[in-house]
Image (cartoon, rainbow, N blue to C red):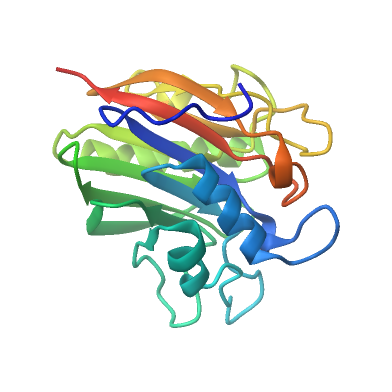
Length: 240
């Protein structure tokens, strides 16, 4: 499915989008274009990757004012500097009624600097935990990184949990063993590269307490050229 259907108020819509610092396939840095795409998805919770520029001081590629005024969302305060919007490029945007109550920052092992954030949220569907990340390029690093995330989750109280991010795994099924059996991995569709999608790098995974209703990749309109990735979305329901 290319365009998300109208959102059912009873469901939670989540999305993940590697925005490549707002640089599109036309080589233009256009945060306004990214914000319009996000508004069109209509998600309650959005995980962004590469939301800050790569080099120190890692200034925000997507300004907070643009997020509020054009995407219609609020920025969860994850950044550890005054000029960034995320941590290791991972940013979290929240829709109406959702608030961040706590965030744990997890440095992840590997060849490149990587991180994950475990965000505790409150909102219309009650307490929710969102894990957002951008995993490494090597499978052995990714598996170590997933193991670190799972160890951190094991130490926390039970709560409906969703994992969102660019997991950087080209295989449709292999490479995700550390997430079993806690998470159910979902494949919204091929999201990379945007000009000719061949791999489902961008994923959603649900833990106990959440079920997948529908998912997809936004392929048309500005999303086809706004980044080298396409945004993915999923509608979830809370069990029980």
